[in-house]
Image (tube, rainbow, N blue to C red):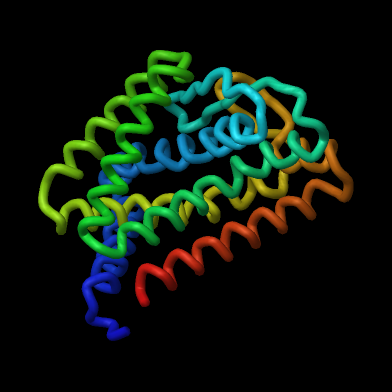
Length: 228
């Protein structure tokens, strides 16, 4: 693969745009929706994992400070509880892998945006339980569906930009991987790694390291597939 290939150019452009959003004064405010995007992926990781394991995804709430909470129910057992907790940490990286894998071609990028947008509409209607989260999810869904109907270049650029944001969520939440308590607008609660340690064994920081390593492996696999 040549560095001048279209996928590599898109990846580099997305990294440059992301760096500008987070470093240039007065432009950082534009990065706020992207932070919310990683929060959404995190909370969906919890809820969808619970549903896949036979539980019930009860509710999803998001707040303007980019915190969120997903509530679920069901007798999943200790391993199931730990899996649901870990899915929130690995969720953004898994989403980034899927975006990069399908976004390698313009057609795949448009299909990915359309499917994700449609899925988010369902999420908003079924589990969004506060006004801010409901409006944000619907606006995001509408934006993705609209982009999917536009040019191939715009769709592919959007997919790569979103994937980069989700990839960076691994690092932006790196402190959360190694803390006992999570602070959200809903109040303090045990962190995901603390829940994993309580449900299984070994200290919370071990599960933080494991989730971080799995996330990095997913990101590396996604980037390799996109750039090959």
